[in-house]
Amino acid sequence: MSDLYDPNKKDSGDPAPAGAAPGNTVPGPPPGAPATPPGRPPAQAPAGGGPTPQPGPVPDAVPNSIPEPIPSARQEDGTTAGRIRIGLWGAPGSGKTTYLAALPIAAMQYQRHNKGSWNISGMTQEANTFLTQGMDLLTRRRTFPEATMGVQGMAWSVQGPEEKGKRFRSRRPSFVLEIQDAAGEVFRHDHPQHAQLVGQLARSQGLIYLFDPIGDAQEATESFTYLQAMLTQLTARVRDQGQLVDGKLPHHVSVCIAKFDHPEVFRPAVEAGWAVQDTVGSRLPRVPREDSEKFFQWMCDDFRGANARLVRDALYSHFDPRRISYYATSAVGFRLNPQQVFDYADYVQPVMREGTLHIRTSPVPINVLEPLIDLESRIHRDGGWGGWRGGKRR
Ligand SMILES: Nc1nc2c(ncn2[C@@H]2O[C@H](COP(=O)(O)OP(=O)(O)OP(=O)(O)O)[C@@H](O)[C@H]2O)c(=O)[nH]1
Ligand SMILES: [Mg+2]
Image 1: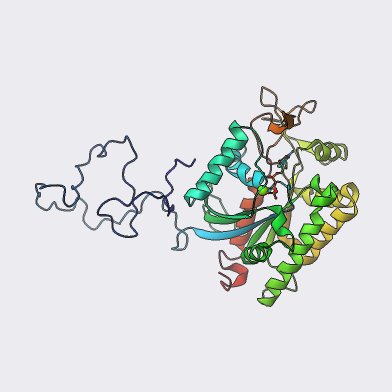
Image 2: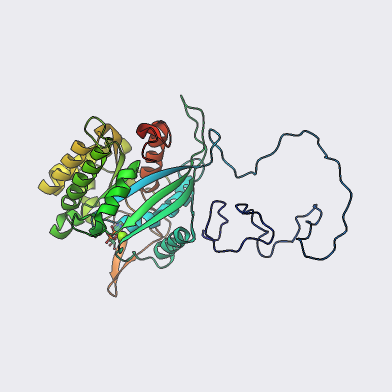
C-alpha cells in the first residue's frame, strides 16, 4: 500500500524535481515508466540542459475549451478533502492497535459484501509505515502488535464509493482522518501524557470506544477505571470551552464490543441467541445491526456484571444516547476452513505457539470499517466539518 502514490503526501523526503515551483508537487513518471507518454511530444528539457530547438507557437487545438481537472481531484462544495478527527479510546490491551492495523484490510475487503470499495493510505511516511507494518503483521506474520508506548498521531487519506443519498445529493466520501494510537495507560488520570490526550479527544468530532469484554474481567484492565477517569476530564475540558450540548459531550460515538471472535465472548453470545449467520460466502456469524445496542446492554447487565454496567451508565450519562451506535467487532475475525467457510467446530483464530499468539488464517475483520465510516457519515450529516461546533474548535 505504501508504494501507492499519495497526492496529499507532504513529507515523502523526495527532493522536488529541478525547476519545480514551490508548492507544486506534481510527481515525475514512476521508475521504469517511459520518459514520455506514448503519443506525446517530449517535454521541454529543464533549464541548463543544453540548447534545445525552439519550435514556433502552435495554435490551441480546441480554443476556449472548459479546463479539465486532474482525474483524481474530488471536490465537494469547492473545497478539497475535509479533515475529520476521531479519537480512539480503550483500556490497555483492549485491541486499539490491532483495530487500526485491521482497518486497511477491512477497507480492501469491503467490496466482497458491498458495492464499491474503500481505500486508506497514509498522508505522511510515518502513517504509511504504520499501515504497511500493520498489514504485514496481521496478514503475513499473522501475529498481534506489541503494546503501544506513548501516543502516536496519524493522518490517513480515506476514500469511499459513491453514496446515493435520498434527501442529500449523492456524494463520494473523501476525507483526511486524524487519529491517534495511544497506549491504554495514557488514559489513566496520573499518566504524564494524559492531559495532552484529553485535549486531542476534546478536539475530536467522533470517538471510537473499544469495550473489551475479556480485559474487563481482569481488575488491572477494568474498562470502567479508564473510561471514568477520561470522561470526567473530557467533560470538564469541553464544559470550560462552553461546548457541552444540553450538559452532554457533543461527540458522535461508535462503541465497539471488541474481540467478538473470542470464544469467551462468542460462545455465550451464540448461546444467548445474539448471533445470526450469513447464508452465503464465508457464512460469517454476526450480531444484526438493529440488535447491537441490546447486545451491549446484555453484555453489561447480564454477562459481565457490575463494573461493565458502570461503563454503560457512564456512556449514557456523558453522551447523547442518540449519538452512540454499537458494533460487535473483531479485528482478526474467525478462523476459516480451507474453503474459506466459518466452522463452529473450529473457529478460534488466535493460538499460542512457542510463547507467541498467532493468527491461524488470514484476517477477515468484522465491523472494523463500519464504526469509522458511520461516524464520518453522521458527522457529515451534522453539517460537515464545522458542524455542531460552528467551526469554533477547528
Ligand atoms: N481474539 C481476539 N483478540 C484480540 C483482537 N484484537 C486484539 N486482541 C488481543 O488483545 C491483545 C492486545 O491488543 P492491542 O491491539 O495491542 O491492544 P491495545 O489496546 O493497543 O493495547 P495497548 O497499546 O497496550 O493499550 C492482542 O495481543 C490480542 O491478544 C481480536 O480482534 N480478537
Ligand atoms: Mg496499542
